[in-house]
Image 1 (cartoon, rainbow, N blue to C red):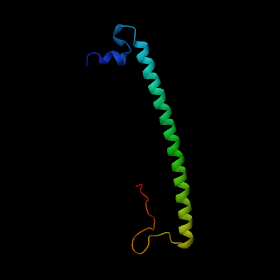
Image 2: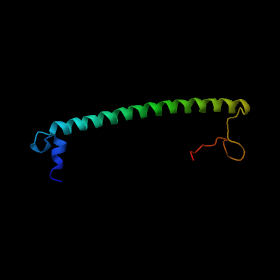
Image 3: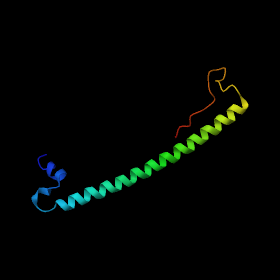
Image 4: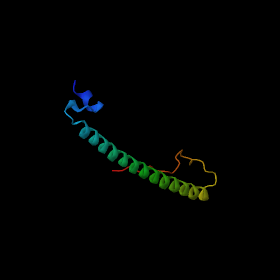
Length: 84
């Protein structure tokens, strides 16, 4: 564990290899950051699709039942689809 601090401080053990370690860390960070941005975009797109689908289903259900309340058996009529 003693040499671990060299990796994080960028010293590289004093042999001049610190630049390579820093560039690898930067490359890894950049790749991870790009993946994070892509994942955030996907989540935003999925949330938008989910919101519009939910709004459409609410509109459709309100046309058939103007009360908007739960069915007499206490269920709302919406089923949650779970991936297999």
